[in-house]
Amino acid sequence: GQMAADFMVLTPIGGGLHYGGYCTPFDLAIGFLLLCLTFMSMLWPENYGMKSPSTGGSSLLESLCQAMRSIKSQPGVLECGAVCSFFEASMFIFVFMWTPALTEEVGPKPPYGTLFASFMVMSMLGSQVFSMLLTKWSVEEIGRFVLVVAVVSHVVPVVTTDVTARYLSLPP
Image (cartoon, rainbow, N blue to C red):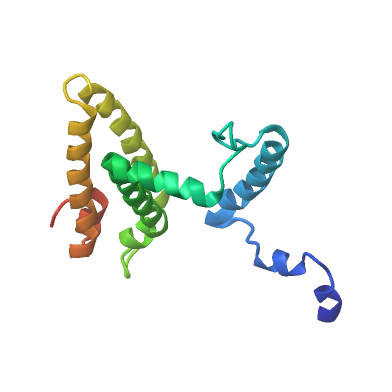
């Protein structure tokens, strides 16, 4: 029986799929991702960027050298890249670690759906607050303040095991 099943192409994939439970939305998302990938590959043209008209394009090495010259002549490019990289890194950490950070070893599991919904509401609220702050402060001033708050928020889970403090990102 098993030897015959091993000859079927999708058997190894099917054994790893999970039906129902908390993973169902993610399982369904795979199908939509593949559907969108199909449409995108058929309908979206490739963007090759700016090509030099005299040379008919530039090599990878030339492109990298131009990028390094831009970074050297404009330090803000490197600073912007660093801030974006740290932001994206913190988002990846959040995506993978928010549930373990809020789950105590003993006791009931927290209401993950409600907690995630509150994160999304706070994200929308942050957009609204940003729009209101723009009337009084510059983007740079708001950015500095946000980065300070972000640093404090990222330190809290490191220094405390209190789940409430971690959820609210308040110093213990």
